[in-house]
Length: 78
Ligand SMILES: [Zn+2]
Image (cartoon, rainbow, N blue to C red):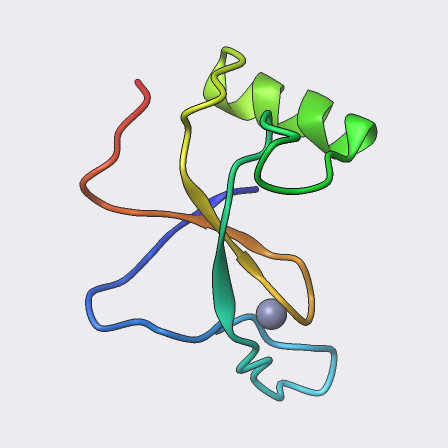
């Protein structure tokens, strides 16, 4: 599930089983563009289902530690 990036959010806020915050740094991620990053086919399918289309220019943010995805509030795909 892709989460909305909160204002002033710069790190990942996912919690693990013990309730500890991930705090991983977020990096720009283009799920359908192998130019910017390596693509993960299984994950692409999930993202495509959620977004409803494949678009090379869809900018997401990905946590460097746990892989959680975020989208910017100014970017709406629906
Ligand atoms: Zn994380």
